[in-house]
Amino acid sequence: MMKISQRALSLTTSPIRRLGPYAVEAEKAGKKIYHLNIGQPDIETPPQFMEAIRSFNKKTVAYGPSQGDMHLIHQIQKYYKEWGMEYSEKNIFITSGGSEALELAALTLCDPGDEILVFEPFYANYNSFAKIAGAHVRAVPTSAETGYRLPDQETVEKYITNKTRLILLTNPGNPTGVVYNKKEMDMIAAVVKKHGLALIADEVYREFVYDGAYTSFGTYDDLADNLIIVDSVSKRYSACGARIGCLLCKNDDFTTQINKFCQARLCVPTVEQVGAAALYDTPKSYLEAVNQEYKKRRDTIAAGLAAIPGVISSDPKGAFYVMVKLPVDDAEKFAIWLLKDFDENGETVMIAPGNGFYAEPGKGVDEARLAYVLNCDDLKKAIHLLGEGLKAYPGRKI
Ligand SMILES: *Cc1c(COP(=O)(O)O)cnc(C)c1O
Image 1 (cartoon, rainbow, N blue to C red):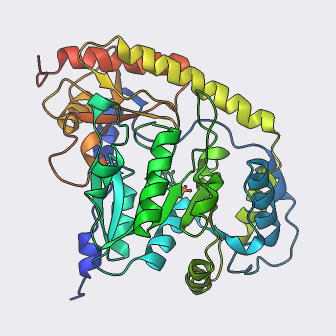
Image 2: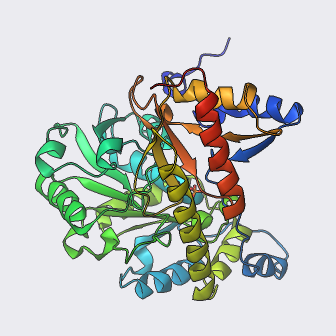
């Protein structure tokens, strides 16, 4: 018999992927499913990526430096400079997606029993990254009724204990679509400084902001010693399968230590880094066009949701998600029912139950996350189907 670690046993399977088998069954039965459940953008990866990979002409696919390919690091440095942030070479580490950056940062900062402060609902994988490091998340609640905005400093500080090591947040937010305003960011910065915490700012959706300008935590000069930025090409350039992300930090103690984790995994894929470096040469017009497209989708989904009675929705301002409170007994049961028992002319819609975005069982039971990664026509159909499903669902409230 093999003994399995407590660490492995403590991890949970992805709540979003749990509905997969029901989708397979629905498709077998001939239903067309509109997928609002996953954040896989339908936008094409810029051709620069494939072109760079096709012209890769080394005779050997060799190991690269553990920190990352220097050309890619320079490209990222240039990109940050355009955003008004100065990072030197030694402050940038290439990782296998933003996911590995998050995992290595948690491993570098946390000992068993330590706590990571998050704002719930939050990106479900944060639970796993915390547990891998032996830490656990402590969640400050935000609610549908207040648009998932952050509470005040005093409330946040109630969740800080002598075990709290860091605050981990996504901005723009997944799953809420919330973009923090200056007051919220100043509050976070004040808490971090006052309690001597690290701040991991997951900013993989930086370009996906639809109402006005975006401010990165990297522009807070007095956070230089506390801040770790997590970034990725996955969402920016619709290159999720490339698995290239990065971590930026100006704290030398931190970078000295994380470098050891990077050395242990030797390097990230050599060829994909060549492709990723080329992505940073994509003309700005690409990012602007993608932003405009998502803004249209955001407007479409927000208008569609506002017209469905009983639905409370966040005011989505960024990323490509909206969190909703539905007039149902249980959003997971409703999501399964949509796949198993509902269709209109052979079509149905798939949503991500909200409970997976909360730390504790029993929370977010009547909530769901919708990803607006479909074109506007499909999105309208999907929201129409959601509305019809809500009318017909036996577990409907009111
Ligand atoms: C997609 C995503 C990531 C990282 O994805 P990678 O593909 O590993 O770069 C990190 N955080 C959030 C909130 C995400 O939605």
